[in-house]
Image (cartoon, rainbow, N blue to C red):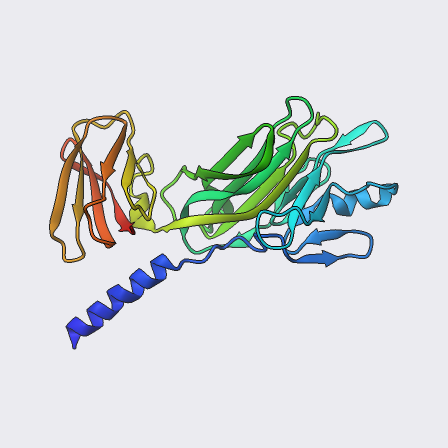
Amino acid sequence: MKKCITLCTVLLSIFSFLHAQNPVPNSSFETWIDYGYYENPESWGTVNEFTWPFGGNSPFTVKKDSNSNGGVLAVKMVTIGYNNLAIPAVMCTGKISFSNFSCTGGFPISSGYANFSGYFKYSPFEDDTCVLFAMLTKWDAANSKRDTVAVSTFFAGSTPNYSYFSDSFNYHIAEIPDSAQVILSTTKNVFGAPLGSILLVDDISFSDAVGIDDLNYIGVKILPNPASDFLNIRLPTTFHHARFQLFDLLGMKIADLPLPDPQNSISVKSLPEGIFFCRVLSSGKLQASGKIVVKH
């Protein structure tokens, strides 16, 4: 009976891991709320609530658009002008302050994530640059403040057709976050934005949930996860005589390989599909541990 319970627990963990849901709310921008004078995508704040009193034909920086990557709608963001003032399109999963374009709020999460990704197309004015930013945070009750756990920042220039972007979260502290924030902007220079830059975004997501074991050493990155062909292992330059060890669910060691460079690639083509546990050592000392999924 004990063996059966253990096996069921393992299988349930595998199922949960493989079927983790994208936590970003309204991530495909299919649902919009009509506030009478303007519309916003549900669960997102925009500067529309500040620009609609300007009147005119185009007082809105954020609109829904049928030119989508998938589904019916996408979000279209445009830097507009008013009284010789350029107003960039900025939106976030929270509430925006129009005075400094900062964002508050966010949405709850219960694990860390490895990647921030989605689809976008961008028509900049001259050499403008768009920004797609995500941040994972954790409330520090002892000091009554919110700590930044990880950030992901993606910049892009002219991109005439929908293109896929994916950027790894850069972890600053080895903690499991409890909240997240996503910020999208038509420009990286919000206080000197050029007029007319247009950004369309669709189907954004957080992927590859990680647990505390995956964050034992925040300088180690093992991607992608799940993996089908190769694992890319990035190490701090301070590591010496590093090694990568792989174990099956029964604890049997099935690989023990040197990691001679700061960036290494290891084939998993010969491994069966499933969950494996891994360790990274430097000079014989354990530096990172976690789990990976092989899925061909």
